[in-house]
Image (cartoon, rainbow, N blue to C red):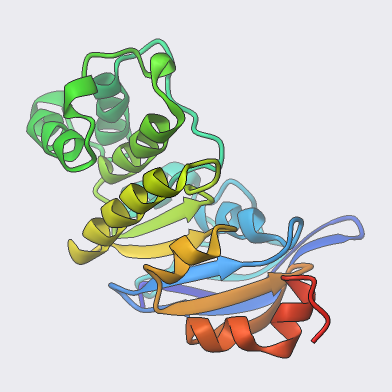
Length: 238
């Protein structure tokens, strides 16, 4: 297993964002995480990446306990993420944004990563924008840059946080194709998403959260058809 969460718990006062969550993700898999707003999905990512410390439980990466390790060490160990709201270095060029991730999280010199950054820009459709200031990009281009920045760190595990939100249908299809290519290259995907049809086009398993607790897990279409998920997530009385 590339990722294991064992009885992971986190609360802010009376607000529980992770309630003894158990989760296993096999290497090379694509897992989708869904749930209503406030279910604890992004907080779960923050616990995995180390920007939040759990109150209890264990996070393992490829069998290694990383619960106490800082975010930069986890990044160097192979965890990368995108953010729901793209956060590029606006005054740096697209290419320079990749260099930052590749050299710092990847712990490599610029000379070692220049060629790889160029390859990633080409594969994500950004090569023609390499010298453009990141702050001038469209939403789709910023989403692609989020992917590219994450890939520049050479991740084994890529966490995607609502990366399809705000895109047109055509743009969403383009993004799905790019994520499929990333997975086919051997990167494990864990994807939080409200655009369910995009999620179902990529993942082979769904994990449903509500108030920090796992509600359901399994084959995507079976999970979406379950009574409890329809009532909690879709707001439909089954």
